[in-house]
Length: 581
Image 1: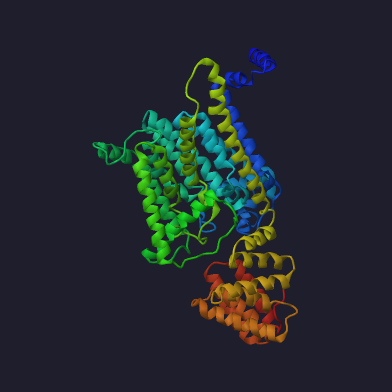
Image 2: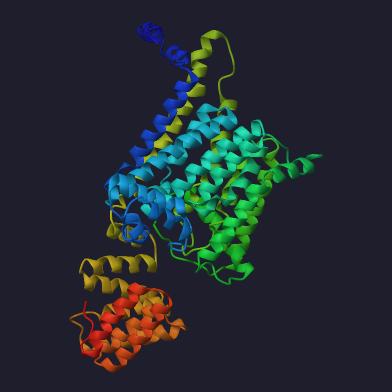
């Protein structure tokens, strides 16, 4: 190393900067470690503001700070609970155990949970670099892929939101599975496939989207592993059959966890016709592509749009078909384009609108693994174009110039793009500072966002700002006037107002009745609201009868906490008093 430095000093004095750059060599292991450390520093530079963020009242309470098992830390009973309980409609034992470990290590404040998310994402960035390098042997391009992926603004939701630990934790096992599969592909054996299986199983116990792993491994078999050619090439059908067969146990694991998620996560996409589902799928794919290439006006929640315009849906389908045809046509000569282009929709399939379970029409966090394919394809394409446009091999005096053109300038361009994305990510991270900031930002960048209005109302009500909270509940009702939950929430706010005038109580009763009618089969919470509204209007006898129905229904659903709260209100009604929290 001293000789290298001395030679560099002599060249610098002679003004031979190009030769310094051309002569810089370090051991391969040193470069790999330096790349991983640089990626970790990049992640903390882009997302470091998360350490000053608090919890947000959007699932964080149910997942972490109001979850009695998590706040008790890592215990034997807690681990048993994690493996035997469906919580928040998910069976994700590794996720709950990771939260428990955070509590034991860092305490119950938000800082430690955010730190773990950052550490996991930094590890994932390093693993992505190592996976790409092991698969392709291209160190520079692999580093560019990892850096661009790691600091993309769409990563903010996955990294900064404590609830979305699911992405960064499952991502860790996903990348370990890719590394294990690379070793298996080089020298197949049941023990090496067992490591792939174990990593995949761990990922699935962190988030169900890892079900796509076997399909993605088939893409890697084509490129860069080159274990097979295109399936329709002569003699390739049997080879692809063997490749699918060797992954049968992985596909079986995917089927098992898909079934588990369908049975545990209720309230999914409903009975939507297949034509409507197909229309939503195509249009949502284009939305994700737009967000990937132009990540602006990002929100924690985007309003649902289930209405399908057939013209737009058909145009979206035609565009996807044309894009797929182009990828297939280029696939033989540019296999990275086909693999990267297919990786994106395949990895999105479990979460895209029309297929996935859940509430959000689309979400930034859903791109955590899918975007890898697009970034890889673009980096490899740009690298190939740059090489073709570069300086041709020439005599020795031209080597520093070639090195400058082929290495330094591309690195500078990538560094500039990474830096701009990191700055955008830092700004987006600040929107997660606290609940009110997050919800107000969503209202500023989206339209008719009933979810943001409702959550902001809850946040303001907890701060005692009831008048402001009521304004946002009125906005929710204006957006969704027939939704039972919208009617119920506003009725509760009006009925429990200690300064409510008689006409306000009457409106609360009308809204509560309408909520019960629209619900068809009212919940215990809705009947509870109706009872509160009846008591606010002075009808204590009817309020008591309604509250008793609500209490029995809550007990039937094993919601003991709500049943106890209703019991306390029932005592007030029997004493001729309204409920005023």
